[in-house]
Image: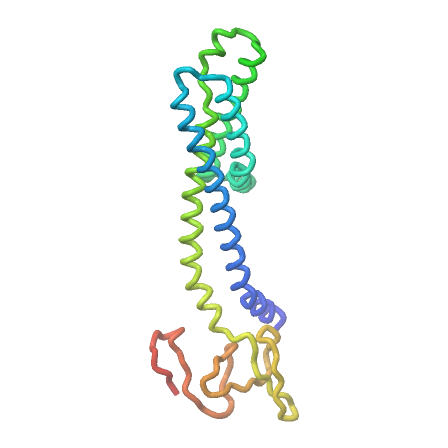
Length: 227
C-alpha cells in the first residue's frame, strides 16, 4: 500500500512540475535568444562593414559584446554539454559549446597578443577575429532552442490535460456513515469513496453499491457515458 500511495502522490504533483519546468525552459531560451541575436547580429554586421579598415574601437566593441553573450547565453549550452558529458555522452550543445568557445578564446588570445605586441606581430596582425561569429552562433541556436521549447510546451498540454482528469479532492465515507472531503493523494487501499452522478472518479476501485453513467472516453474514446 505504501508504494501505491507514493505513486499516486507522484502522479498528483506531476502536472505542476511539468508546467513549471517547461515554462522555465521557454523563458530561459527566449531570454538567451533575445540577448544573443540583439548583440550577435549587430556585431557580425559591424565586423563585415569595418573588415577592410579594422579600427581598434570595433575590436573592443566586439570583445565586450561577445563576452556578454558568452557569459549570459553560452552558460546554457555549457550546462547542457556538461550534463551530457557526465553521462559519457554528447549532444548538439556539445558541438556548439566547442565551436563557440574555440572561436571566442582563440580570438581573445589573438586580440591580447596584438595589443601587447607579443611575439611575431606580423603573424598576429594577419589573424582574423571570430568573436562576432561566436556571439551570432549562440544567438541563432538559442532561437532554435526557444522554438523547440515552445513546441514541447504545446505537446505537453496533452499530458497536462490527461493528468487534470484526476480530481484534486474525493469524498471518503467513514465508518459512521459521514462523508469527509480529502485530497485524492491521501486515498489508500481499502477505503470507501462516494462518487456523485456526473463526478469524476479519483482512483481505480470496485463499485460496491449504486449505479450511474460514467464517462470512459479517457480509456475507450467513446464520448457517450456508459452505465
